[in-house]
Structures are given as structure tokens and as C-alpha cells.
Length: 247
Image (cartoon, rainbow, N blue to C red; front, side, top):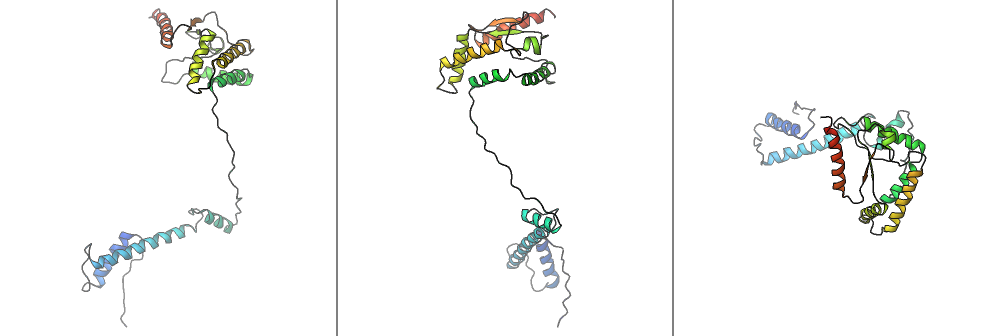
């Protein structure tokens, strides 16, 4: 019986390594039997098929070994099995679930609710802190701030460079609001919008905490007969005129 002393590389683990190793094996031990290793030869067909099988088997072998170590395992059941084997008893729970109802709150309703919430002293104090922060410490890329609110001129920024009290006829404001809401909800009614504005105006003026009021140093801007652009232009002229005094 012949003594077959073959030098076999047991460290080959992927397709290319198997392929190169099999070619080298054939050239070393069967130099006269087969020497056509071109890509379309019959011999290379079998060599690459064997390399393919070896690569797949190596992958699954590595994966199975990996799953036997708790620090490398990926499959949930294997993790639990390994934990139990090591003496741990993980508490198996399910994720908490909750049903959320999402609906659209129309802007006029938001305004009414905001007016109610703003009467809460704790909420008002929290909002004041946030508003003052952005008023006196605006983001670095901005040189100043512009705030809108019912108590901005006398409570949040009493030392503001410019103060404007912007208003308009109640009916005109209702018509503007009606046109805006009509694009969102075709069922919007003008009378309901007018009623909600009157209710909010009364509530904002009579509330004890930060009521709506005009300060003596605020400039009144009546926009009843002005467009948005005209209102902006009017305010800009006032600001530009005042700035020029210091240049």
C-alpha cells in the first residue's frame, strides 16, 4: 500500500483560497495527469464547484460556532439558551403598546384653546422663560429678535427697540381668518369664526395673567385697510427712520 504523504492546508476558508489550494494540489501531486487550468476547462469546473461547496460549508460552520458564544450570538433563542446555561434567568417580557388617536385640530380651535391654556400661571411662567431666552439671546447667526405676543411689550421685552401694537377691525380680522380656514376646511362658517374671535378678544383683554393691552410707548398699526406688504412697508419705514437718527 502506497504511503500518501500529502501536504494539506487546513486553514483555507473561502472560495478563492480553496480554488488556489486545489490548483496547487493538482499541480504538485498530479503534474502529468492534468495540467489544463484555463477558466473554461472541465478540470476548473470541478475545482470551482468544490471551492463553492467548501466556502458555503465554512460560512455555516463559522456561524454555528459564533452562536455558541454569548458575546457573539445573534439569534434570540440561542442568547436565551446560553444565558440559562450560564445560570442567568432573563425575564421575558413583551413591549408595551398604546393606541394613539390622531386628528386634525383646526387653527381657530387651537387659538381658543391657547387662550385658555395661557391663563395657567405655571404654563405662563414656563413660556416667559423660553421667550426671554430667545429675545435676549438669539441664535448666533442672528443679530436680534422679533417676538409676537400679547404681553411682549410690557413683560417679556419692556426695553425692546421697537414696539408695535398691530390690530384691525374685528369683522375684517374675521374675514381674513375665514378665508384662511376655508382652504383647510370647506365647511368653515364666517359667523363661527367671527364669534370665536370676539370670545378670544374678550378673554385675552380681561384675563388676570398677561392680558392683551397696548403700552404707551407702542406704535399703533391699524391694518384694517392694509395688505400684508403695506403693513410691512409701514413698519419698515418707522424702523429705518429711527435707525437713521443714530447713523
